[in-house]
Amino acid sequence: MGEWTEYRPGDRAPNDGKYIEIGEASFHMGINNPKKVELHKGEPFPETSNKDRKWKRLHN
Image (cartoon, rainbow, N blue to C red):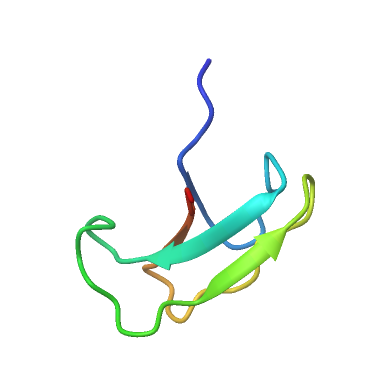
């Protein structure tokens, strides 16, 4: 099984890293000033700006 690529608030971070809030349809939809968080493996994702958004790993 592969690793998920989108995460909901309350999900646990699969790996250490930076994550960014993405829009409802896909990450191609621009969000003005999206939230960014840095989490350690096992930490829960925080709430997003609205219920239709999710978290995605930010690749450097």
